Structures are given as structure tokens and as C-alpha cells.
Image (cartoon, rainbow, N blue to C red; front, top):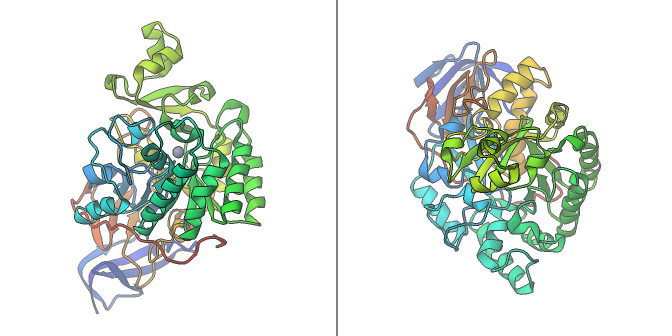
Length: 486
Ligand SMILES: [Zn+2]
């Protein structure tokens, strides 16, 4: 038997959570064609994988790479970690449909540059990606914040009936054109004035398409419990599945609160479809004028449009040098992103250990000093939290990075190694895998990722991008997600 690629003698971890097994894997064109003892097979390319783990390529369910998939299509920040599929359009802010001109209100101005091509429909964005694909597969949520910016002249009030109707029609069209769900970010100024009823009205459209409501909740600090209740309420009233993005308990006063929030999620899951993801770091990263700096023990500037030379510096040091208080210094840095040390290590471990939690990078790749999670998230979980700390097994970690998000977001034929499935693969060394990125040097590729393949083509090999760009725009299954157990 003949295959395009043969992976020989790999430690196979298949993405289902099943124990590892020694096996060969054959790939032809974009698919896995056989798994098992394939010693009689011949391949155009053969890889000796002795001692190495072969797993489904990782799926990052929460990134803000809507624009860089167009402008930096090699996507090495993702492929160097073994990520083969990403979900964009998070936190209420998607690149499409976008009908207004820059300057964009924050935080859209940190997700999109002023030079971003604008797509009046999701279909137009998708057509552009199909015409010039990136190295990774992409799916995209449709952002309620973006729809508000398109529709409302005054963002500081609830949408009126006409505006809600217009946003629902726009969301309906975008979901029909391949958007995989709705995202909201009532934490952020463009959507802060949206009452729960407005979010329910949008979630009803997601429900009509059998798609998810994905949210950066209104509050992840002092009122995180109330925000969870609001999210559950939206899911119940609209009848759709809800997904809590980058779950955290921010602020010193809220350290330890994840014992309660996870119990709340557990209880809600008995009655409705609730999922979540998180990042494996005690520092968060978002726009700099969020007020989060008051909850942080330390704030680092990740990127500043007027002061790019200050990226990587601490806000407190900048303020001291300028002889200003933190708020005044912060205002001079805008638009800007920051890294906020706001979480407790115990909470990070507890949320990561929760069996329904997916791993996400929440990456914003702009500037030269992003959060190290942009380049290091998945290897950090595999190396630090699985191998070194022993939080859970490697099989469980791989499942939460592959099979679980694929099932959750309906990415059919991915996230699980089986004949007939797409050949999205990562080959890594479990003994050495680790993040290379640090807060000081955040653009460093991971260690121990030997190779990454997307749709059967190598995109990362021997520490470098191959230049291949075989990514596809992912469609979703047509069945209803609401009520599904995940
Ligand atoms: Zn967010």
C-alpha cells in the first residue's frame, strides 16, 4: 500500500482521551488513510517518530487573529505551537461584517489596524481567505460589538428596536455565510450599555442557526458570579449553548473564587449547555484603558500606538519617569494593550484542571511585545502543567486541545485521529516540549514541537515555517448544538 506520508512508530495520542498506543499513520492528500501496523506500506515521505508523540493538531478556540491571517499568513505564532485550527472573532469583535471606517473604537482598534481591508459581509471575508489562505484552518465568530459599531451612532445606550432588528438581520446573514457562532463582549465600552435583553435578542439568532453564544463576560472580577448568572440566563432565554471565554477570577479580592465559579458552572451544566476555555497564565492581556490596572499587582505595556518604544516596560516605571499618576500615564499611551498580573496561580490550576475546560491563547499578535501566550500557550500546558506539575495526563491535555473544541464548535473531521479524518497533525517530544516565549522575550517559538501538518501538508518543520499555506475556512456541522453534552 502506498501513501503520500508515513509516520512510523509514533506514540499515538488520538484526541479522544484514550491511552496512548504505538502506531504508524498513513496520510494521502489531505486525509489520514490508515492507522496501525503499516510496516508493509510505502510512503513518498517517511518520518521515523520513535519516542515522539503524534497527536491531532491543536485547536485554539479563542484568538484575535482576524487580520493577521490575511497579513501574516504563515501564522508561525500558531504553527510553531502545533496549532492547526483557530477560531477568530472573539470577545464581541470580528473583522466582518465591518462597514465603518477607522479610527475604530477601542478595543477594535487593537484587534484591527487602520489599514485593515474592510469586508461588508462575512462572505466577502471568507472569499478573501479562500483566495489567499493562511497556513492554519480558520473559523470565525460574529461579534456583537462589531455589529453595534456598524449600526449605532451612540454606543453608550441600549440598542433600540430598529437597531436590534438591523443587528439581528446582519448576524443572521453572517451566520448563513459561515460564521460559526456569536461572540459578545459586554465588558468592553462598545457593548457595555447593552442590557441582558439585547444580548438575548442576538443569542436567539445564534440559536436559530444551532450555533453557540460565546462571551467575554461583563465582569471577570468582583462581579464574576453575577456575570456567570447573566450568561446562563442568556442561554436559557435564547435556548442556545453558551461558552465562557478565558474564564478567570481577576483581582486580589477575588483570588480563590474559582472554587465557587466552577461549582456554578457544574450546577448549570445539569440544566443547559455550558462550556469554557482558559489561558495557562496568571497575567491577562487586553486594552490598556480597561480599569483592570487597579486590580493588578503589575502592569506591563504590550503595545502602544503613540509610544511603541515603551513596549515591554512596566506602567508604574513609565508613570514614575514621566512624573505622572498611573491614569494620566495610561491615557498618554492609548491606544494600547497591556499585560495585567491579576490572577492567582491556584485559580489558574483549578480552572485548567476542570475537565470541561479547553485551552486557548486569547492571542493578540500586534506589536513586538505581546503576552507570551500568543506563542507559548499549548506547549506551556503540555510541558509545565502536565509534565512538570502533573495537573492531569498528557492524553487528557491533548483531548482538551483537540477533540473537545472540535466537538464543541462543530469542526467535523478534525480533533481526532481516525482514518478518513483530515490530516491535521502535530509531532512533539513530550520530554522537552515547553514554551519558549517569556514576558521578556515573547516572540520565541516553543521547544519540542518537531512538526505541524495542516490538511496533510507540513507547515512547521525543523524550527521554521515551510511556507505552505494549506489552511481552509472551516464550516460547521448543520445540526443543533443546543442541549448537546460536551
Ligand atoms: Zn476577551
